[in-house]
Length: 400
Picture (tube, rainbow, N blue to C red):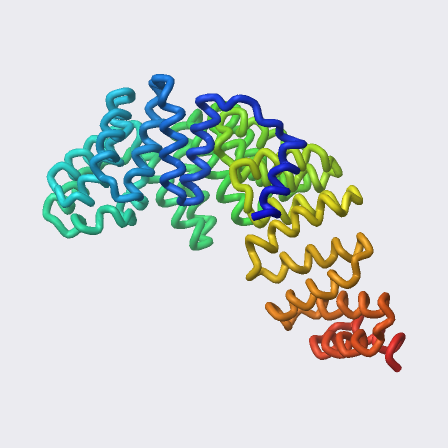
């Protein structure tokens, strides 16, 4: 807990806290939902709604939190409120809630509303939704799916997802080309083509496809998010950052993109920008392993070893089952001249994973620094047994 408090103080250097706005509480609620801390999520959504918000998605997300807590009556009230503010927006939540409450008729009724609405999700996601397990063998469920709910493009998208997943790229491209010939201005079709080309490693073609989709629909964040992946593959990090930044401006709740952009800034040697993104992310996910790992690595690059140790120590506290947590901190201890602590952490990592030759080598090197050649040679032998060529060289230099 003490390390978590320390890292929080470290965060504040980069992300000073101002009075929380309605949207801040909403974002905090979303983060709590992702962490499955549903009561905390509800508390944050309550604060977002307190000023008399008329945003339907605040009620949707609070309803979702109530649903996962099993408080179905409260969930139902929130989903109904959402639908009052934005017609049918809460229908899928109501269908799930009524299914859990054992009311098949009401569940099917709201599912029909949902399938006829612009909020419609994929057929696969509905059929795999465990909330509907209790009604999926009912006659009304079977009858529901006899009706054609999805348009030609949605059907195409489902088919492309399957063909791409099974690496049937030629068949997928043929289907997309036929659709493009009929609907040349449909942005989503070019995005589908981009996904196929990305999956088959045709990165330049994928970039062209996603750029075409964006030129036809510049407001769709998914197109830019996918093009960012293409730019990363091609090594065009500045353009990837530009696309990710655009997505985050339109939807700051895509928290994972802050880590992604931070990683890109790190590779672009823009450490302070990377730390700013990580600090923002860590406000919402203070114990996230990957964010803290990257945080420490950036501080090491900046030769700020004390700050790096704070990041790595928080990971050790929260993820003691992961040998990387101890290896990271051991590396930082070596750089800060604390060899005794480095040896201890490498030892903890080896207890968790004795098959990593690099850890044996690194601990052996620290033993050499401390003048303990006997222990160093034992470690080098273990590394050699794990097929480490460097271990052979070190053993010859210090042990023969």
